[in-house]
Length: 351
Ligand code: FES
Ligand code: CO
Image 1 (cartoon, helix red, strand yellow):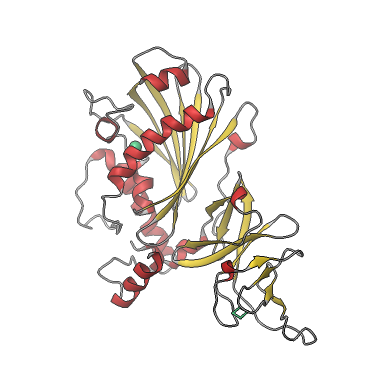
Image 2 (spheres, rainbow, N blue to C red):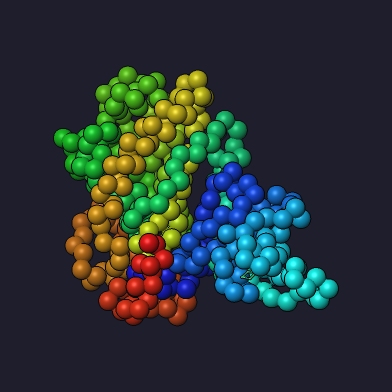
């Protein structure tokens, strides 16, 4: 599936930027191949417009935010409000301004700016940890990866890769049998539950305050279609490490990884810097292998990949995405279907 060719994917919410990187902006971002510009209005609320001025097409992200919290183009100074309406043309201040730039839904939640490019099919994902007592939020990673978002999602439900990809951290190299898993359907996604035996390496012993060489991860992992996942890991001593990972689709070949965690222990028990350091090791292990995979993930079972039983969560994702496309009158677009000119344009955008 080429994400930029499936319009229904524009109807989901994606985290695109940590709020503090938007002070006040403007900041450019490419979402599903579409260039957008983000900034904070005078009321502090973030806004998103197409990053293309309706006068002579300059990128609005090269401009600046006015004292009134509006976005001024850096080329001739046309000024836009959060709805994309041109509100001021400096060269002709006495005439009513004309001109409109596309605007997008934009919300601040969990410390990030979320954008939806079209009529949303769902609410923003709900994470109870954000309002429950006893949890602290640790912001971990914000970086582009050269791989498809669906690969990142499938990998995070794949219990069969621990012994190989994560053999240097928590994987048990003497036990490659993947933990049994159970999948329960949910709206626009599913929940997977599994208990996986894992190694407890030195840094993790310190973070968990647990000396055992091995332990268990009690995992409850929720997939929010298409590219957000929350993995709640409970350890036998009661420590909960609940990680949100979004693979926000930049274009067909690149995903912006946005990851944060909630933990129910204290900074004194497990300093945030060390929590991030351990998750960094694990994440780099995943990244190194995922960036070698094909970006065009086939949704169709006969798409040219072989499977094993532990691939089930990924296969359920592919099936749910097939059903989503069908329900919205779309057909899966593969790399071989895409018009050549379009593929070249996508590559140029990234260079
Ligand atoms: Fe933006 Fe002219 S291109 S004001
Ligand atoms: Co992994």
